[in-house]
Length: 330
Ligand code: IPM
Ligand code: MN
Image (cartoon, rainbow, N blue to C red; front, side, top):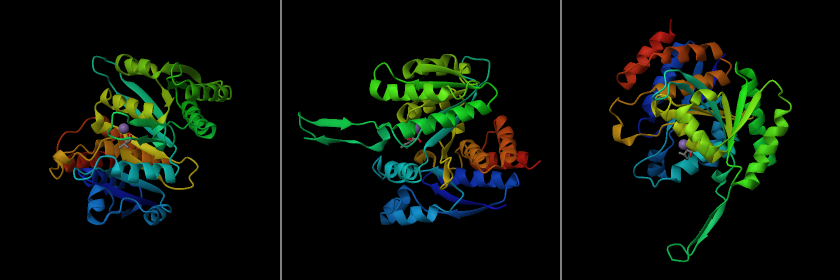
């Protein structure tokens, strides 16, 4: 079966690492048809398009979207992030952001293996709020966080399903219930209610500040973590830092109902400082493509790709891609 993949290489190193990911997917014997979409900061500078509704409609029929990185030094920070990345997450209802972490934290001698499930369509990311009297001593700024029972519950259910499918069958809720009490009680009550339906899954709760300590000092305690959009954003950068670096961190933006395409992207950015130098490590993009294959039910190819990435490869972007492609081909 041919999988139809929309490819948004994006800016900077994005197109290069994405090309390696596609090379590896093909080497693993998975049949994909790709169509490139020229989007990102460079496209915006050309003709003003970030992600129009018409382009979004063109993306909808695809099985998945593979994205490299977006962000351009000549475009004000936030423009492409909100207009492209967040627009895809919201409008395609990619309500799960799944980020796996496998590695050995500095100072530790045992490997950890955990997954963060980050709610991806609510929280402070909705852009609720406003500002007035900007630039004056009387400036006011508010930034809301939206949490709905439906949004929280579908995320928590996904996390319980995932935990139930894993060997350790353990799920930790991370929040800040002692201070963010309105959102916190919604998350906590929903978590406890859904937990009753999964008696085989062990549970725990950590405040987000304590979770930061555990990520560094004792990440082995975690199997699956579920948390809100902003806590998940911050924690997953820390997760990358204790798991071999952001060059290895992969991510899936999922619409588990499959009413539209899910989107897969490395956690790192467009790295304009090393663009065009064939220097960027494509491993995070390749591992993101493996997450895409999991979602496309090509699990054995995905497992072979992960196995091929387990032994680190050094070298240029294309060398690393070639070595991993060669490994999965056998
Ligand atoms: C991420 C990124 C994005 C986020 C930015 C670029 C909007 O940091 O995917 O983690 O905050 O979600
Ligand atoms: Mn982030």
